[in-house]
Amino acid sequence: MFHKILIANRGEIALRIIRACKELGIKTVAVHSDVDNEALHVKLADQSVCIGRAASAESYLNIKAIISAAEVTDADAIHPGYGFLAENAEFAEICQQCGITFIGPSPDNIRLMGDKIQARQTVIEAGVPILPGTEDNVPNVEEAVRIAAEIGYPVIIKATAGGGGRGMKVVHSPAHLPNAFAAARTEAEAGFGNPDVYIEKFCERPRHVEIQIMADQHGNVIHLGERDCSIQRRHQKLIEESPCPVLTPAIRKKMGECAVAAAERCGYSSVGTVEFLLDKNLDFFFMEMNTRVQVEHPVTEMVTGIDIIKEQIRIAAGEKLRFKQKDIKITGHAIECRVNAEDPVKFTPFPGKIQGYHTPGGMGVRVDSAAYDQYTVLPHYDSMIAKLIVHAETREEALKKMSSALDEYIIEGIKTTIPFHQKMMRNKEFVDGIDVDTGFLERIVL
View 1: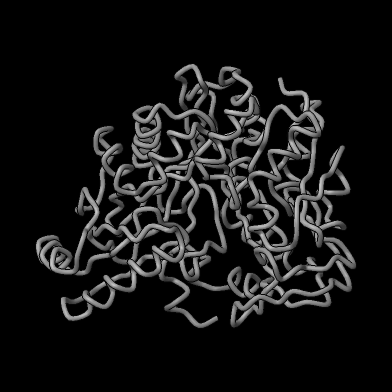
View 2: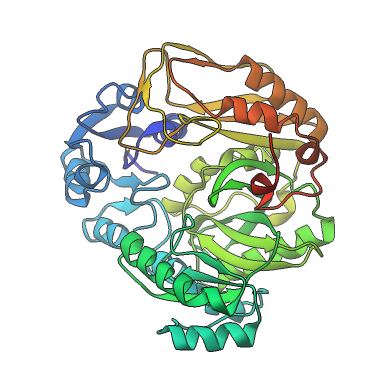
């Protein structure tokens, strides 16, 4: 097991990793920007190192500074959390070259599944269902017009190196394709430094369902069930739950087997998530694989009782999985609401100082957050300040528990998305759980 882990991240995920390390008896190093001196992860780690200015490019994305901090503090491993450098193959490679363990998949895994075209080809070979689409980069608009006509509208244009909705355009007719194609390439170039795009059939009103997988370095792969992440705005998840309200046991089993097959095909090792689109007929199709721990991993932890971060660390240390597929039992229902420092109507960032703070409690209530009273939410980073997670025997009970917890959650001095979540927990369609898809928030008025 590792002696000391440097955490190349901030906020609640850094704190989450520190807690896991403490339980494993591992010392921790927090890195931080010059404006994050008062952050909780800095206060609670065994050591801390300032690695640069507020801008992410000068601190949390500064590979040289992070590696130097690891060497100076004698850290033998680095955990990237999610975001920032978590899916940066070059960073993982540099860690290896410096004799530091990267707690995540191999650089080759990151590159393979990070390239959406190669990822599609890999899962096809594993027998995983995909939507009709191109197997290569679409080089020009003329080829895009031909392919779209062959697939049939509507189609979706996606960046091959994409994520978070950037470089993604839905096209419903030939007239709109040229502009959408140009816009997708421009966004892809700006967001990822790679203008390449591909085209696939657009799945109308799908649910977004993902499978959590764990794979060790000895060829063992299992899944931990699914999460429904369909409540989104601008392709950003807001509410996640497990299990999915409409999945049957047979489909759940098949989807889990496909996720495991995809991971086995690419020789994956670490924790990760295989994401699917689920259509109205309950047919599912591979969307992408995230080669890191997910923001929403706590809902899976709540229904399985497995600490995903601790298992991820054990895997990176070379240990074999401690579970077989038959050991995994899904118990009850869990829901997670992401609490962002944002206007709850406009969803625009709302940084500032928290003037009053009280977290909810009670049986089955969990708050993952690095916020506290008088803490200043900074404008330089992601607006998420907390994840509120509840667990109960049934979905109906979980919804009521979440509603109660949200009413109890007090954050004063800034605007947050708590009022949005309160309304969602009382929205009849969402509570029913049947007529929900990734476009749900675009159709309803809260």
